Length: 346
Image (cartoon, rainbow, N blue to C red; front, side, top):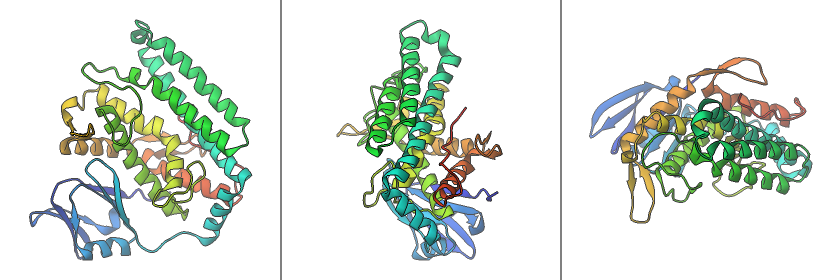
């Protein structure tokens, strides 16, 4: 089992990274705030106005620790990494599969089915835990309808051979799921969700979803690189310069059970409030610095929780599941597995 290395999130405005021996040091206004041995780091994510010395960046790259820079609202800015660790034979197999209609469709089919089933699992969990409350209005009926539609999407995907048709089913699943997402929010107050809006997010729920999805994509991109896959060459998401298409592919099966449930838990448990968000003149909504830190802490804590992997039948931490899924995809591309087994949450 791979050692569970930590991701360091630096969110303090004006913080700076520097090297001291075999340690990465974080300073603010010249005062040391924390230091971390390099051998315990798996990645660094700098959010907002965070600086780094050239020595620190070279030190991180030399030891295979990828550094990602995000804007204050979680938008990707830049990424620094050391020498590519990918196996050339694996990457060639990945490139061939992405260009072969049948091989590409096989991977996309697994991802779409996994996504639809995981979205359905979230709906079922809400019906199980809060069905009585929803029954007071029309919420229960709407969720039962979406549960059926997501099941239907998964069934149709199982019989679909065309990649574009599978992409259409993926979009259909998202439309059904987000049409009732607002009903998952049980906390009182001015929380409102009228649909998924990304660029820019126009309400606190969308801002929170976008930020957590960014954290998830970072972890999945690192997982792809760890096992030797090219994170830029995907199957469901078309290639685009600067886009980590493969990481986004894998994110589809993770979003419902990991990212979305974390967002809902923080709202419904009142760990966040609408006052933790800032509204800008262009209508964009962004998390406050303190709220971002709270989300990151919750994200790291969630990744330490354990679960049983449904395909491998092993107990593991949630934080290692991205690497395990990347490994399973690599095994499929090498011909060791007949199909890519998407992670299906139960």
